Image 1 (cartoon, helix red, strand yellow):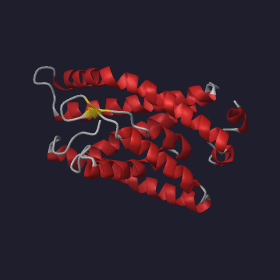
Image 2: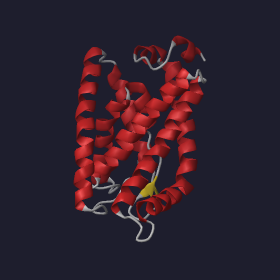
Image 3: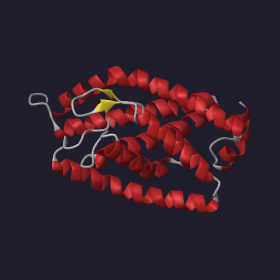
Amino acid sequence: MHIMEGFLPLRHCIGWSVASAPFVAYGLRTINKGIKENPEQRMLLGVATAFTFVLSALKMFSVTGSCSHPTGTGLGAVLFGPAAMAPIGAVVLLFQAILLAHGGLTTLGANIFSMAIVGPFAAFGIYRLAQALKLPFGVCIFLAASMGDLLTYVTTSLQLALAFPDPVGGFAASFAKFAGIFAVTQIPLAISEGFLTVIVFNALARLNPQELKDLNVVTAKEVQA
């Protein structure tokens, strides 16, 4: 993911930035409201931010102009809802671009849209669906984190295909090429991220189950499981 500085055409950079901005603004309102109602959430918010920063900084070079890595956004999406991850992801991506040369400022909007918007919303939706199907708590978390990761890269493949359509096959052929290359590294990374997120959630459930229940993340029965 993390499309590099200067790789996308200017109009694509502007377009993805405009598309991401409302989500970031709404996410800030969501976080501020949550902290006012439950100030004790600050600690978990810091955990979710650090988790995202560390995991998404572990990059493997993949498609030219991009890279492959875990995203870490599933944890925060399940804890605080997907909207909160837009500003969290924006901060993470901004600091990585400035401090680690990971991603870029011109491509920040595109990277926010894929990792901090699509990934978290997908993770949250999959988590709720798995809950509705009455799957075990650990399975719900695993599916949310792993599929949120994969759908982030599906979005990045779409962004790259829109910017660089194949001369012969057009958008579809370019999308298939980018997604196929990403899949080689990203599928095992997504599985690993899913397991790691389950471990972190199990630790949180043991150490601070009340906060998870206060956030309506889990029920008492799920925490005990």
